[in-house]
Length: 229
Image 1 (cartoon, rainbow, N blue to C red):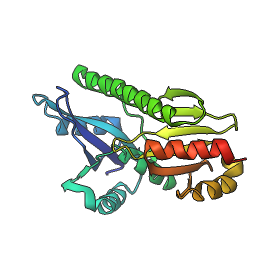
Image 2: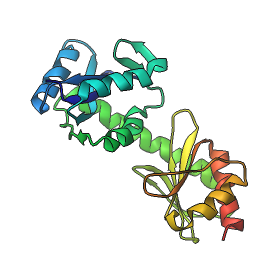
Image 3: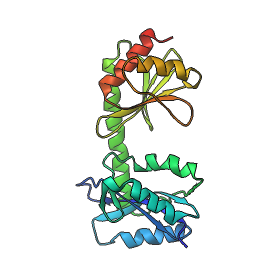
Image 4: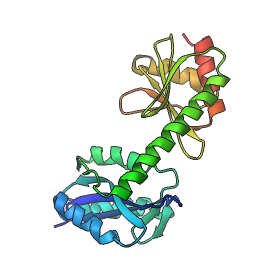
């Protein structure tokens, strides 16, 4: 019986190309089955390896897989492989899996030295990119804010007790979340929307603005720091 929904990707162990595709599939129960499926997809003599990036367990795995395939039809490349140019598929699917009560499976760390090397390089590249973005936004702020480049992305700390989290995207259209904004969500939403931006509420009740560039992020922060109370 198929009870695991997984997301896999291909990686170039030589580090020469970025492969923006993800596979959404199903397999039997247990990590052993998941690992054996991974080995089937990976050709040990090929410079292209398969890596499982997320997996969940659910009794209706096949129906869920079909629903996701239908939902992502516009980005289908071939079979069960889909274009994930922004590398956000896991992030987008996660809330839906939580909503239907799927149990997330902890992915075992790869023991393949080449795969480990690729992952380590990707982490370093992201840290560098986030640090550059933090600098870009900082130079656009009217007043300097205490900041840090965290694992989740560039972060700015306001004296107004808000925390600005930037979720960086490869396209340059980033997400801006406002930590500790639950109690003032309605007022903050009205203020930001008066600037011409749409505001959503995340699952923790905080405000967020999606798909904006670094200039827009700075504009919103500057306006809040100057005029929002």
